[in-house]
Length: 213
Image (cartoon, rainbow, N blue to C red; front, side, top):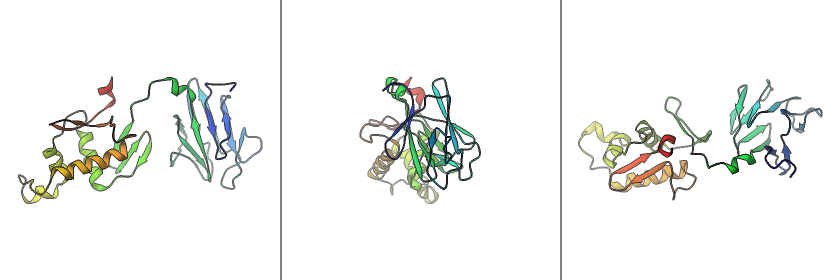
């Protein structure tokens, strides 16, 4: 390849579109660098903009919107390797070969309690109410070891109302199963967790990026 470290978009036909210019235009019009054959695409729908080693997707005001990992782009958003860009029914995958030469980045976990939204590396994760409650509690106590008793009281709050000291209705296997299910949602490999780890004999801990530095 003439530009081995140049980022590119991969379209549904697996064709690679090198992003060699400062601004690459996408849209229905034939004057664009990447022409999109879709009635839902505007004539000049979106731009891919490069600033040094960073790459952005810009939506200059398209009618039907540009979507990044399923969420509408409002103005501009920075791209990362593996991001999905959707214009109409056409989806592109952004690839940045330069990232393969760097260390694997620590997973970026965002927990928005007010909105009830969890994102992993900017992609929405669907959790059950119990999984969400567990993650919220662990996130509030990030980098601290949380015992099974503490998790039980926080997640199975229905037991607190009748008798705050009574944990007889919560068994270790219920907590362990919930931890296991949550790991399948937030870990790339649930069998080798890097975010939600077990501290043998003490409980569980949700790591932050600072723990790895």
